[in-house]
Image (cartoon, rainbow, N blue to C red):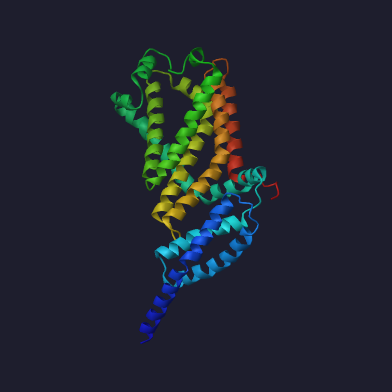
Length: 328
């Protein structure tokens, strides 16, 4: 008898919640209006009042119809309303400062395990690529074009004479665009439940290891290291970070927890955007280094190593620790 009474009560509460749908739609419309920055001064009062009722309705939905369409809709509206009401005043510079100094470093520290797994996977893939080409040299065509292979076999790198083909400014711009695209691609493929990101990280590692093994067969691996070291520390670091963010996206879709998959997807992409705010400027710097320093034979190896180490240290210090001396 008690169970029957409880079921009847839940059905009644569920029916009452469905009657509230017009009010929720009106509140949702108000949220959209405020997103377009309406000048109607009566809207904020309605939003605050409606948000308080929404909190009460959501609490009731969680108890009576958890996991239902209405429950998920109210959860989404609650998150949107909370962000709208409690967000900080719109100052772009202050917002960027908070992201760079506090929020992005906190995200990196929280996902330290995923980042470590990604780095280990990348290094392991490099070693596998090296061993694969050493054992089966004919597989070099999987990682290098015919032109690249012919030039190495003739005793020179494909990077030799780059500055004779195009000026450093255009070369830097092209490399910046490519690096940013690869990083975004590595993250975006995490939408395939992380499998796409695993593929990209593994493939890039195999290619790097395979190319080094191939150039070593012709005594050019030192020259390849000399070309890569100045810009490669930051460039490869960002790829690993983008890969870790992609795995985090895949994990959010596989295990959204108390959120819906849509909510988990939004949070993961929002977090990635904050990290990329810090990473992308360093990719620009890496592109400038790769365009002006890496292909120029006038720069000695010691100078290139110094540039790579210093830029890498600055990048990781900013990414992990942020700017703690700044006050919010």
